[in-house]
Amino acid sequence: MDEIINKVANSSLEVFDLEDYYPNGIRTQIDLSQWLYEGFLLKEKDFREALKNHDWSQYQNHLVAIHCSTDAILPAWASILVTTHVSSFAQKVVLGTINDLETSLYQEILSKIDYTQYQDKPIILKGCSKKPVPESAYIIAIQELQKVAKSVMYGEACSAVPLFKKAK
Image 1 (cartoon, rainbow, N blue to C red):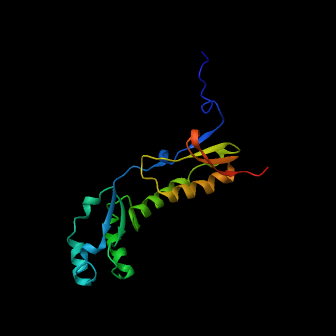
Image 2 (cartoon, helix red, strand yellow):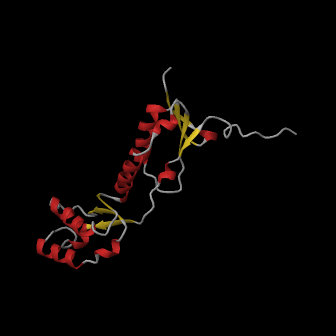
Image 3 (cartoon, helix red, strand yellow):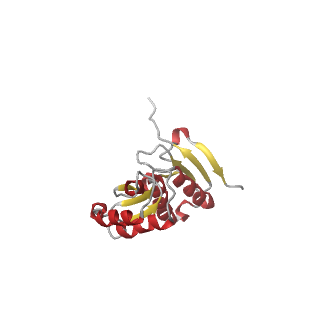
């Protein structure tokens, strides 16, 4: 009986797994509509009072996304004012949804990677993550990888989809 050889493990193929860069931390979304009259109308005095009485310490070390779940038209200062309260407790604050927060986190992380380790190598941009890696992180990653890689595929070694191949 012949020995089974793992050709993928013995190849020069490099795996770029975005899950490896997934930042730890509690994600929290703050909905501005909770402080609006009937979820739509901002009454400045009431809004400021509600923010003053809110327990901001509950967001200690959280990664926070500030958004409004209703179609309320809000002045720009509303989210900025909320930020002044939460930022002394939170690790990071962004305007938008949790997905916007994840995108912002990945933009920071992926901009700090030294991609030269992937110079002229075939890369698999690993898909099928167990963590909530936003699609935007893949967009950021491919732009950086195609600057240096010989080729980039997406998925798993057994069923990778070709995305990019450097011209000869």
